[in-house]
Picture 1 (cartoon, each protein chain N blue to C red):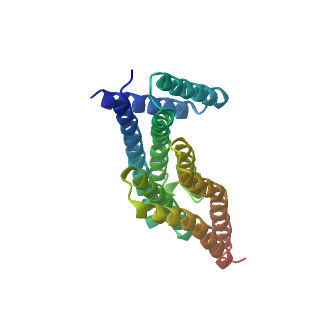
Picture 2: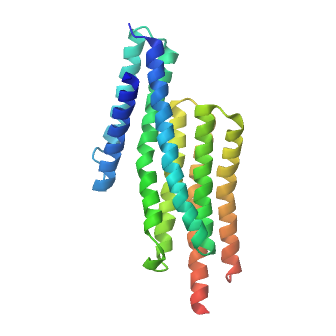
Picture 3: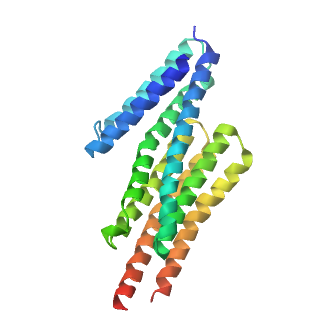
Length: 100
Length: 160
């Protein structure tokens, strides 16, 4: 007979540390994107900001899952959706400003 | 103590396997064989837990959480690789390095959305799956719009 409580704790531990490791990796990638956003020209900065919104959105969603902070999910959804849509719109504006 | 040792071994094994795939530049085990094998292993694990007295929904939750943790461990390696690429490829490589950076940020977006989709499926969080799928749909348009804007702005600057 298997002890359900101990094996549930094992699964929770695996999930928590997996999510935590992924969040650390996303934060490191976000630092690289921040460097890109700060030093480049307009389109490169836009690309870096887009990657930062992705990193922040995914991290917030994971925070909502593992720590059950409810407002983080709404912020994450707004960041992920509006970040991608805003990048497309601003890229289009930059292209039109440059001569088309 | 045993659970911590299991987490370390499980995480390191998955990270090492993904890093080995990345280093080789191709799949060591074809996804058409790997994914069905993993599904069969998880189903066998659920059956084993059910036959040992664990309720079915609890067994599914346990196996799903272990699988979702594994997917997040697997997503760590491409994220670190993307970060290394973003720090490494500076402006000294010329104007076309923009497209390499565009590819790298595309990797960040893709890995994030795939982790959201498959992790959400395994822990039965359909809101996570929906947002990840919507984001996954938007990624190619985003990258294409950025590359398009850079291409035309660069040619405009050349003409000036």
